[in-house]
Length: 246
Image 1 (cartoon, rainbow, N blue to C red):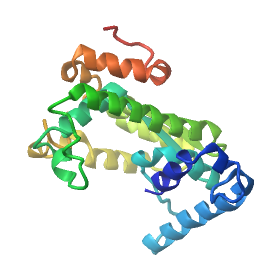
Image 2 (cartoon, rainbow, N blue to C red):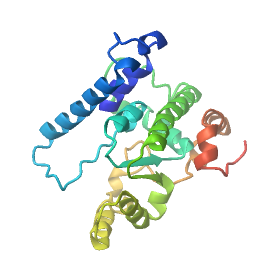
Image 3 (cartoon, rainbow, N blue to C red):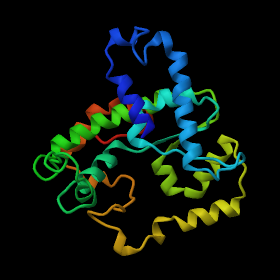
Image 4 (cartoon, one colour):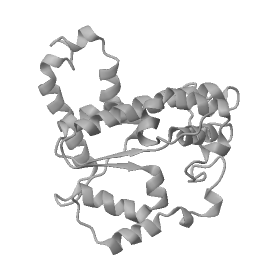
C-alpha cells in the first residue's frame, strides 16, 4: 500500500504546505523526498523478497493505491508500467455484489464501520456514486502517471485481456521489452484461466463472480448506470467510446 500511503498524504496536503520547504513533501524539497520514496520501495522489496535475482522482475499490483501512482513512477523512472482499465460500470456492479450482506467483500471487512456504511442493500445508488468517484480518482491518477512515464509502458483493457488472454499477454511482454516463450505464456494462461477455477468458487456473492465484460447491463439499473456514466464520462469516452444511452 505504498502508493496509498504517500499518495493520500500528498493529495490531502494544503496548497500552502506544498509550497513550503518546511513541509515533509513540499515542492522545494521534491528531489529529496522523491529519492526517499524510491529507497523506501526498493529497500522494502529487497527485504520482502531476499531471493529475488537481478535478472528477475518484481510485479507491484496496487489498485487501491493508484492515487500515489504518479509519485511512485517518478521515483522509479526505469520501471515498466502497465495501466489496466476496466469498464467502470462492471467495476461498480462487482462491488455492489460483493458488498451485500453475506457476500465475500462484506464478510471480509471487519474494521471500523465499513459494514455499517456498506449501503449495498440499503442504498445501492449511494455506493454506486461512491465507487464511480473512486474510479475517476484512482484511474485518473494512474493515467496521469502513465502519460508522464518515459520508460516502457503498455495500456491494457480488462475486456481485451478476458477475450484474447494469450494475445494480450504476448502484447504486454512485447511492448515492455520482456523476452518470453509463447509456450510458457500459454501454459500460465491455461493455469489461471476462468474456466479452470472450481465451479463452487464462482458465482454471485463470491470473489470470482462472472468475468463477463458488459455484464453490468444485467446487474445495474438504468439509474445506477446513468450515475456512473455521468461521473466517469471523461474516461468512458476515452476507453469505451460506444455507450448505451439511458
